[in-house]
Length: 598
Ligand SMILES: O=C(O)c1ccc(O)c(O)c1
Ligand SMILES: [Mg+2]
Image (tube, rainbow, N blue to C red; front, top):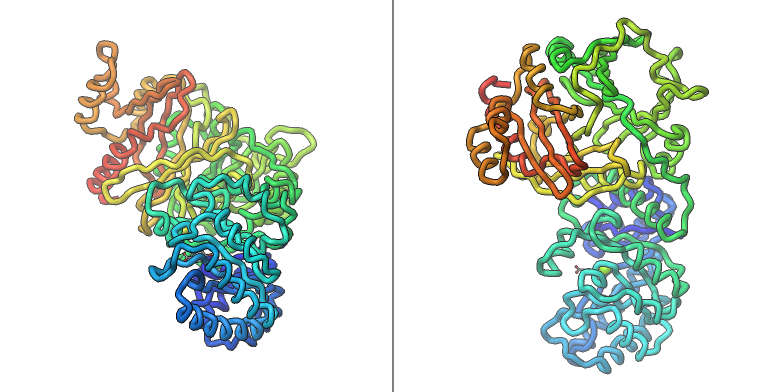
């Protein structure tokens, strides 16, 4: 199917928007009047620019407050329309959007609305234009798609059809099944937007919080299925008013947008990209650091041992149980301090996983970094984290482990069994993109996003997981643009006994994040503990949570660069990440940083 995007969905000048849309692979655009008015290009130049970029102009929008108004006002509207239809001829576009009137002068008279829209359509037909009438969810008298369709139907004019917009339909809770009663050829245009489920004024919701399909809470794919059953064969067009996207760079937003439509088309059976290959485990986490010492001291105290080194690069492998951490001190990575730079994901079929990623517009990284390296399939996530698709120890497939030579045997078990989860900080503009990426590209399930109070801002966090929980990634972002380095990334290590692991860590010279006594007083009020249990937690800085399934106990190391470690004991199928404890942990980390000046 053809894909299109409204210029309002992207930031920048009209030229920047068009370039971004074309680069991301869209077939067409909806040109918003304001983008045209503000552009130094003539309509002919805009038309030529679009043609050069391979973009059609699928819609010009919008005309407002046209219908069901007193005759003198309608005469003025027709005059305005004549100008706009002439402009559309110069632009080379044939469909104009008319949204249902919000004017206080509009009257509640469907017959009048139909009659006036019909006269508008007469004029349009003479100019080679079609009119697509759309119900705004906050329209004065027409606010539902079926009402708009009844007016269009009763007008019975060949140059008048309807424009369906998933936001207006789903935000009002209308049943989209009724769309199937509209003949496909009378649906002149289809606009798609998702949105988080918020209880708020629908106009504000629409103008500030729309997002791309798959990023919110609406069943946009379900709606599209109804539309396709009518025989609609126009474009799928994204019309997203969003405060964040207005500020974000247009290029990545356009790619995110196109990816959302690729996933949507797959969901409704209109595209067959390579199937998702869901990762089955974490092969390794790679930290880069300009100074290995603090990190290796920390790993040592956590019970890790350095077991191998890369044959060609300054990268060491540290292991414990199934947890494998690469410490990379290469010069290319020294600039930005210690951070989590790459994740190895066990993949049932690394090459197929990379094909899926490429089909969904993920940046594919070179397979071989150096001539002697094993060729590994890898892609970049929206936050820049490199994701390697691994086949550790599987004969016949390239193995990252082959690039390493052993230097020491694996350490005796010291409590850590593997990596429980990884927490990655997203750049502010890319949070929704990140969730869609991990879901669409990697086939991980995205859980609800949760708000977490940090003393200096609100964080949003959303976990993406595979079915058995062997891959868990927590995506986190500040609610407003901040210095990203404030919010650290972390590696959570799974242990069967967090008390023993925490003690061992401390005895080995590690220091755990201290937690205020008030927190433990509150725990005592909320839960019952065995004698001495709470005192142990208080002593070690262990935090505690319970959900419907089980119990979670966890504690934190100090932060090195942007990275810290968490020790977690997840019992009886606990599903979360200790979110209720996060505000206390964040405050404690700020306090610790203030003390150390770090
Ligand atoms: O918010 C608006 O005014 C507006 C305009 C045109 C549309 O297609 C729409 O869905 C909303
Ligand atoms: Mg719309």
